[in-house]
Image (cartoon, rainbow, N blue to C red; front, side, top):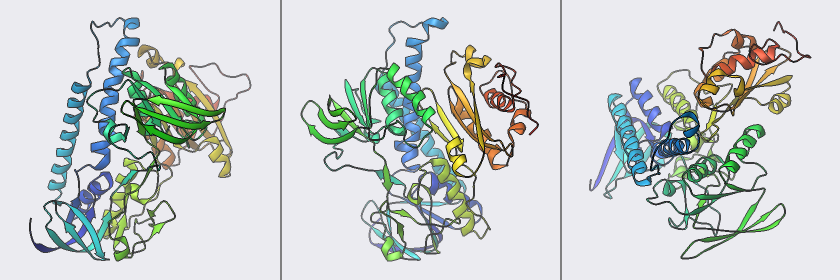
Length: 481
């Protein structure tokens, strides 16, 4: 495209990631003339550089590691077993390409027009699109949705160079595996990809500033993952602050300060994963009059996803944490329905989260501490996978589910779980909490046997003092709640 053009649309969506493409599809379904602008690839970071490619490689590494470790015990052996990163990457790329083409087809079916390039606001109802070939186009809109996501945070002196210091995107595109990796940051990405590397034979060291892995997550879940990582040979430095990085032709040298004093660490590569910040640079927010919140720079929005400028909405990672694709989906739907004139608001009791490690970690609702702070009367119980038939059959007894209920009302308040497939049934708990279900409601719901989801029903029965598959505690009693 050359020269300058102009067009009009009812809705301009900037960003084709989870929040943006779902918003565009929903708006199209509701008859809103919608134009989506994406500067990279449809699907955003989640599909192309995060959720999907990482889970593809994680799945491959779990299969490889399981065959090596538990396979012989259950009668499965393989000769000449090895992990082929090149083949795994080709498979990963096939998965990503298929999903990306699916997003494009869904947008087309909803009547959404897609343009590639960079959009910048020139006012509260106008923007300029710069196409890849340098051509420019004016876009006049009635409403706009900002869904530009987030970019990795960087520490001065630790800037990624694509060689010795890498981001998750670069790590996921390695063609060969290094002998050793330092992971700076023990959050979700650091733990998931650090464990992936350890499973396939890389020497991994994780350095985390906070005193636990996965800061902000339930401490019991964090401790469960720590045990797995240590079993895999991962070295952990928690409560440790990185202070200096030296790069060389053969590797990196990290100087840090830990609880016991100075720490000196060496590796071939350093994976920097210390969090993300909203991607709002060069959007022309000032020209549009859109305000950001605090130092982090998230875009302030109300429960209709509107910023301080009524014509401009913000969804997904750019619109405050948690930075989760499924949260972005819902926000995108709300924004699109508001644009279409529907009385929709972003209101929820809980947002579930899953960490794709081994064990898989899932949580939704309140922990006991959070419930207490909110004025509730929480009581929690823990049901072990070791008492679950399916867990024994699947060679996956190292897990548990913790249920938090309100002693005063019997309401289900929260679930935290570590174990095989917990991410697949955490949504049941989210639905129960959203609908105001009691623990007894959960206990009375018939769950299929043998499945891992039975853990929910069993934990509810245990909370009520009526367990079937673990011994009833002498101090327990049946509850009528």
